[in-house]
Image 1: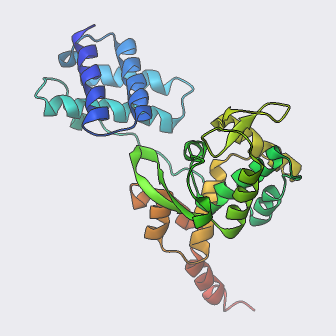
Image 2 (image 1 turned 60 degrees about the vertical axis):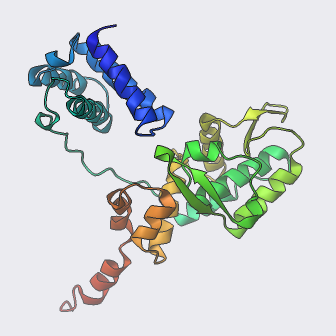
Image 3 (image 1 turned 180 degrees about the vertical axis):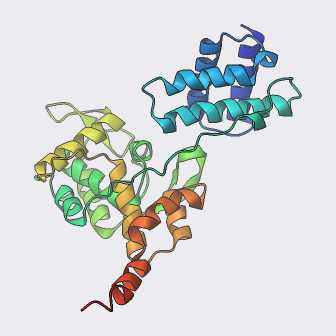
Length: 294
């Protein structure tokens, strides 16, 4: 193991132990930094130069990686250099690395009528239909991320209408369930006869429970419900989270409250929804625009 690889391992341990970052964050940072080492062939922290970083960024730019994904590599490298500086290990100053400017991402929000059709798509009272209906209702009612909904334990009292979840960055927040969601979860759990500890489970073709549900299985059931609802465009579970946020803002919720419900670390992340929901500006436009036209 080279000197640089030792420093990277120490940095990853620091992230997990002292910064209390999740295992997933550690895995991502490890992948980004290992790619940097593999591409540059550097063996020491002192060998990291502006030129080497620029060469690495050029390699990234010529791949099929999205701009936002490329930025993750640069952010990981910059944070690693900050760690080296904190440890007084000679290397490139992190301030010399300018983070890429990323255009504001477009948010795909489900039309409300489309959303209603998708929620009603699973029909029947067999376990699979009840599970699918409960998952779809939970996605919209809570705004949970895909990984969060797959990690929900069965043991919680969902009839209370609120639970605490540990989300991104190991942050704990409270999420709430609508009456229709509580009803859907109860009907689904009443049908369960297995001992699986997770709330949502995967099933084989015969309808037998075979373990906890996977993110890919949730994606497939959302796609299946969308097709059944007559929606041909690709629908992803994360669009329910977008719809959850915009629905709250359209109906008058303040930005800080929506930030807390979504589990965003910074309110700037939540602000991406405001351009879709600024009802006040819409009312002003309707009231004052074009009054002099005949």
